[in-house]
Image (cartoon, rainbow, N blue to C red; front, side, top):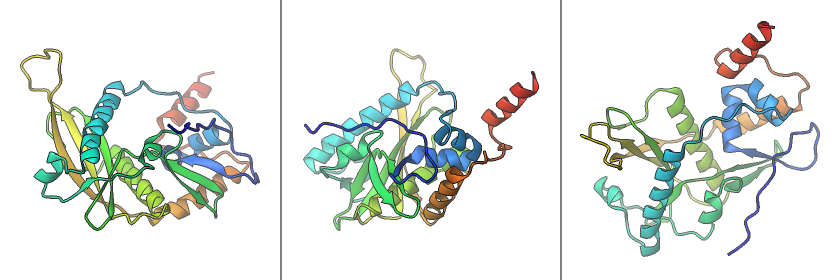
Length: 249
């Protein structure tokens, strides 16, 4: 097995000649709050980390194992068949790296001098070799999740899908605008827990668009090259907390 390469975070230095590694999640951080992004990538002051999503991670791990069985057997998953799709898990030797956090799918964006990367959950392909990005999502709501909604979280999911599509195209793959969310919802209506959770599972298609990505990377470059910390984001809870904490002294 090839030795995996991991990268330690380094702060951005204005004018640096070496490419700067920028993850998909940090692009999202910039869009959420440029000030928090600047503090993180330029000054090395990150937001406090939240509690780990260990149950979600377990679902993610088990879904990957389940789809990998069909990948090795070159068969379609029953969920995919149920939606009338002729798609099979992509069997590509690069997939293990593309799934690996801090490695993922990578592309050198020349205009910004960023190595952009992101770790995918899964990739499917059709008989013509077109690739479809697949992302696993887990939640627990009273009603099954049948479609993406107009919420902050689901907007993040959309952009996540689009960055993966953009990265894969820059790696020479023919990638469909259509991606799929395998969305599992933990049931709450069981009579008792009995040491297990049951899930509804739905396949949600999404038509992505990647036109925003290049301009966003250029904007991120300008942000990091500036010596001025961006203004506080009005909708950022972290900025609001810092401002109230400073005002309390």
